[in-house]
Amino acid sequence: MSSDRPVAIVSGGARGIGAASAQRLAARGFTVALIDLPSDPARLHPIPGPYRQATSAELDLATAACGGRGEAHSADVRNGSEIDQVVAAVLERHGRIDVVVAAAGAVAGGAPVWETDDDTWRAMIEINLTGVFNLARAALPAMVGAPEPRNGRFVAIASAAAHHGLPQMAAYSAAKHGVAGLVRALSAELGDTGITANAVAPGSTDTEMLRASAAIYGLESVDGFVDQARIGRLIEPDEIAATVEWLCVDAPGSLTGAIIDVNGGFRA
Image (cartoon, rainbow, N blue to C red):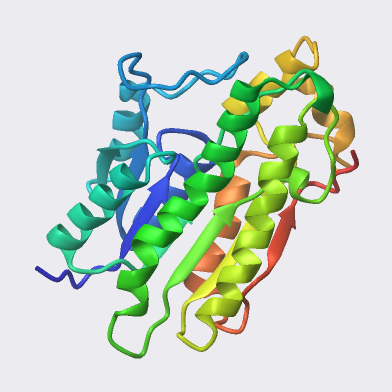
C-alpha cells in the first residue's frame, strides 16, 4: 500500500540524536521507522569499552515519543541483510521512503593507533561507517525509483571527528572521515535525481557517546568537554536534530554534498 504521509527511516533511533531527529520528523508529519539494536547478548558483537548500548525500553520510549507516528524496528546496522529486511518491511507497509537519517553510532578507543586492537577497529568501522553504507544501499534504490518530481533526503550523522584526528580514537576518527567521503560521493552519484545527500557533524553533544568518551579519556564527567566549545557549554541532541529536520524538510534541493558543522565552535 502507498501512504499519503511522507515516510522517514532513522537509525540509532532509541536515544540521543537519532531519537530527537525522529521526534522532530514525526512532528512535521512523517511516519518514522526507528531502527536500533537493543542490548541482547544473544545477537550482539560486543563493543569494546564503556559505551552502553540502547535497551528495548529506550527504543519503545523513543517510538512512543513520536506521538503515534513511530514504529520500532530491531536491526543491527552492521548487518546488511537485517537493514534490507527493515527497508523491505517499510516499503511493504507504506509504499514509499522519503527521508533517511543514518544516526546510529558508537565510540570506543583509549589507545594509540599502534595499540588499537582488531575488535575496536572493526566495531568502529562497521557501526559508524558500514552502517551508513548499508542503510544507503538498502533505501536509495526505492528513493531513486520513486515517481518524479523527487525530493528525497539522505542525512548522515558525522562528527567533529570527521575533520579532526582525535587522540586515542583513531578508529572512530577514521570512520567519521569515511562518512564525510561517502556522503560526498553519494551526492555526486545522485546528481540530478532530486535526492540530496548531506551530513551533520556535531561537536560535544550530551549523549551516551559523550559519556563513554569521557570514560575513555579518564574524565570525571562530560563537563570536561565544555572547554572544547567556544559557546561554553555542551550541545543538546535536539540542537543537532533541528539541523537534521531542516535538511530533511526546509533546505533547498541545491544543498547536497555538504558536511554541516553544528559544533559550538569546536576546538580539538
